[in-house]
Length: 184
Image: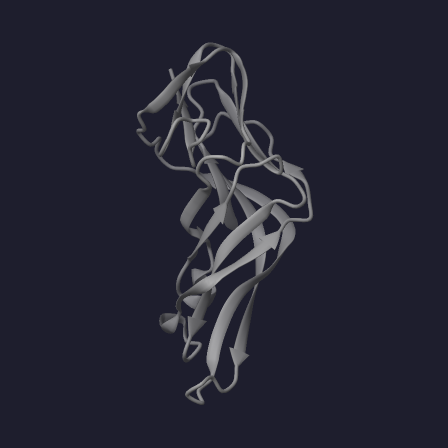
C-alpha cells in the first residue's frame, strides 16, 4: 500500500479524499547489485496511472489515504561491467484502496479562515504531495520508497466544517500547500 495523502480534521470536522481514473503517481524505483534485501537503493523513478475511481468515506479521524501498487522485481543480465543488476519498479495500481492513522497533528503557520461548508484542494498549481517512505515495500527489498502526486481534478482532499475554522498549509498557503490540516 502506498500513501497518496493525509488529513488532520479538527474536533467534529470531517475529511476525505477522492482518486479518479487517470490519477497519476510518480514513485521511486530501486536497484541492487545482488538482489539481497540489505543491498537495495533508490535508482530512478517511474510513473503509473490509476484506472479506478474511489472516494473514501468522510471521517473525523487523522488518516493516511492509500492506494495499492503492484511492483515487479527484475534481473537484468550483463550491464556494462558484465554483472547482473536487479531492479524493482512499479508496474500498475491494483485497484485496492485503504486508510491508516496519520499520527499527531503537525504545527503549520500558513493558515487562513474558512466559513462553514466543504473546502477542497484540487488545483494543479502549488506543491505536489510527496511522502518519503510512502511506498511500503521494505518487507520485499529492505527499504521503503517515496511517492509524489499532484492535486488535480483526479485527486482531491476535502474538509467539511460545521462552524468557522482555519485551514493550514505545510509549506505554503492552504490553496497551494502539499499537506493541509484544520484548527479552531
